[in-house]
Figure (cartoon, rainbow, N blue to C red):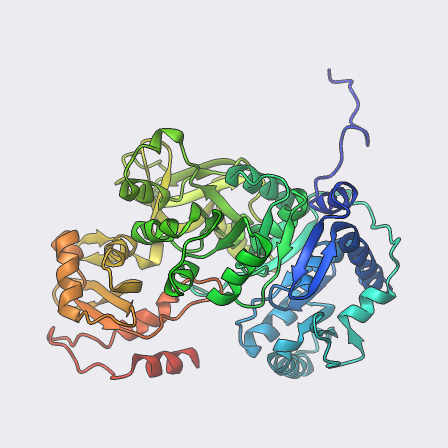
Length: 566
């Protein structure tokens, strides 16, 4: 057997670019992308990607050059997921909610050669470029990227920031452009920056191999059939849309692009285009539920992740007609790494018990070689009893190549043959993992570990609670204790005492929040993760050393604004 050959006939580098070529051949006349009044077929999308890749090559974009883009979920951003790597370059999709300073930092750190800016983000793009220019003049270590504006393809406005515009590049490119064959499947395909909610953003590098395998694993884990109609309620900049930018092509599906995740726009897309699939953070459930009550005419499959969804919220969204599968992942894992695969033996259970099972993070996607919950000090696996807590660790081909220009952080993340997620969880007897907290969000009160996720789950059982987050606040006797930040329904009349009593009825008393702060909105990242570092800063002002309550600021929204400027 050792003499059997490895050759081009039986070994081809893995890359998700093959999904587009296959879709164009098999589903050539099927709708690929829909955006407002614009519609493309897979044959047209393939040609547009070839044209754009050709134009990028003519602009001297070469192997491993970084191409950055600041845009919402529009056809251009979708096309760049194929066209940029077809030109041999690396796609850097930037979070549209970042400020100019952070965007400038990303552009400099990535050494982006081209910067595409959607017309909606021209102002923050200009500001970022000014900061980048000033930084370059001081350091003389980098150069300015070429700037390309993305006008609205549905209603071209003629907006220009420079000499180039996206549709012009597409029209000028060669439709018969032949991409250079990917020979090294471990070469980079995408560069994604972490959200920076717990530390400075780091550049996470994905390989062609990792993107390919992760995409296939998620299609299988979610059970996505051929020809889905997929609505882009999840930002494409977030882990490349959890790899479904490539996955929808692999299934010959239709991408329904929307600029914003309002209830009106999402329900309109569902009704108009017959949406079958969507991904989102649990926060989007509230957007859908807070709209005018309705029931879907046909089920819509939702893959949710980004934050642990409370069981009560899962139960409510499924009553509307959405069918939810829960996933867990992070930027470093090329999106979802665990999926809560449903087992038929659970079908007879009550709705409440089903929702509790679905709230677990689940089992590894097929790409992963292994997942475990370990004591990070001893590297011993915790007991599989659903109670013993440890750090969730992963290993497999879908894990990132590493952090760009940061060997120290890469080494810290990869230890003893595992990737350390920084998430605290438990392992159930059936092998399903459940998150209990981020390691820094565990509240230690009088020597007892309190899971903020568990307290939040109890809060969501209250009928008046729309959003909830729990963080530690100083306590003169116990060291720290839980503090709840809550958003109520518009018509709700619940007071602090009502919420605390509700928690006493549903939790051990040591886990009950000592204070409840009501807010109009909780601070979030663009992907729906609540920014607890802001809430922790606010919680420090709530109790005085004497354990008597200080007079808290009257307007916590103003305090949030002040914190966001730091």
